[in-house]
Image (cartoon, rainbow, N blue to C red; front, side, top):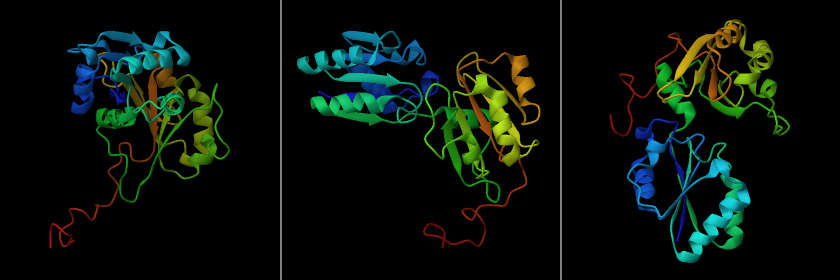
Length: 248
């Protein structure tokens, strides 16, 4: 018996991995994050038990897993995006290790990757930014020392900010001194879902644009000079005259 933590991707049912889809269709028990994972992801399953973890607390989830373990049933624990990012799987894994229940993590497409694709953007451009910082806004859960937005913004790297759209004005104030008022920023609402929407602007005007859209939750913020920039150098990878293992 194994618990599979499966990344279902950002919303589009076709963005789950082949492995994740196969496991969902073969596991006897499915526990899925119903508030963020569309029902279409579960199509074709033959599970005896399907539970929506949005309606359960941690101990109830563990009890379902323990019951499946006692019966020798595999569990598909389906999370949105990639389960290793803000998936709250660490606390579940801690229980499973204590109970001696084996588990496997199956990665998924992240919201950051989906949003970059939607915008037609590469998040790492030569001479502009070669780093991407994935972080969140500190609200109910505080940030460790040194991980405040203002501290991370000092790097000037491309930044993806989760769980922050309702605090956008505060975020802009923290980023402005480091990125500049003219820095491009995008706010993407429910990327890859049928009702996806987004807005692109600068730190100077993004708040009013988002307010006009009415985005309140389930949105990702991308900020950095890579967005919409065509002023960057070419990479060495495809440069004529640059030799490497596959192109002497």
